[in-house]
Structure formats: C-alpha cells, structure tokens
Length: 233
Image (cartoon, one colour):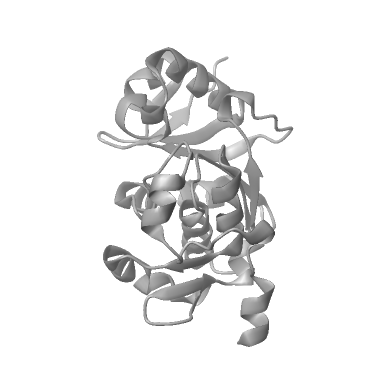
C-alpha cells in the first residue's frame, strides 16, 4: 500500500483532490467547477446503451476509442468515462479507450494527475458499480488505479486554443459553455466539431444545446444531450 500511494504523489507540491474540496472551489481558476464521479446520469446511460453499442458495430477488434474531455476540472469526469467504458466493454472486445482531458488551470490538472479523491456523499452511491477501477484508502477516500489513470492524458489548455492532430469519436464538454460569454459559445462548438470524426458524438448541456443544429449535429434521441455529427455528401 505505501509503495502505491508514494507513486501517486502530486507534482510540484499540488494538493490532491481529497485534501480540501472547499479550498479547491475558492482557489480554482478552472473553467468548470462542477464535477464529480459519474455526475451526469444521461451521459453514462446513453454512452452505454447507444454509443458504445454503435461503436462495437462499426469498429474492429483492437480499435482505439478516442475521447476528448473539455473542461475536465479535477479529473473525475475523464476517469469516470474510462471506468464506464472498460466495465461495459470488458477486455474481450480489445477496444482501448484513450482520453485527452483539458482544463485551463494548471493546479487543478496537477491534482487530476494524482488521482486521489475524497468521495462526496452522492458519489459513494455512484461508484458502487465501478469499484474495480478504484482503490479505497479509507471509507471515503479513493485512489484511481493505474489501469484507469494510464488511459487519460491531461493537458493544460484553453479549448479555443487547443491544438490536436487527433480527431475524436466522442467529445464531452457538459456545462463548459456556461462559463463562457455568449459570443464565444458557437466558436467553441465549431472548434469541437472540427475535432470530431464524421458520425462522432458531442455531449453538451445547458446553453450549448440550442446551437447544435447550426453546426451540423442532431440529437440521438428526444431529450438527449448527446448529439451526432452529420455526414454531408
């Protein structure tokens, strides 16, 4: 146990996610402050019931499932994505999730790399089905296991200036647009659209949904927050 915890010490003296959620909230300049393990029920329901099933139908064994987590905050969202995908796919399909997680706040990215968190009350219920990806250090403190952490690459980046040679099957920005002024929201969505593969998916909530038709996306079903990128002939 001591060896495993030592390996996850935070870089540059950063505090890990469990040390003070309140301190993190007030000191953070992160774009997105709302975060949590498996926080968005609609995201994970549609991911497992629709999107992963579609991916299995259209991709070969040993394919890479490329995901962008924009405004990833302290890392709980991208780690949740990997845990959900691995549990759904098991290892029998040979499909490997790879997540690029971005946030503008270097300090909070450093905390995300640590992978150590104090679970909030609601999170204890959420993680019950995904405990294979977590090591419980105490009753409410967890360490994200190496098998999950190695599938997430964290980067300090402004989404408007993000440069990536990759294109992604899925992008998740959830409430990201809420934190930007109106004049930037369409620009951000167009930026994300350019990074998503044809027939790929973008998850947005709140103010972002009303712009999706204008940039060539459609809801995967009524009320969904996942939108699919149209293919234009």
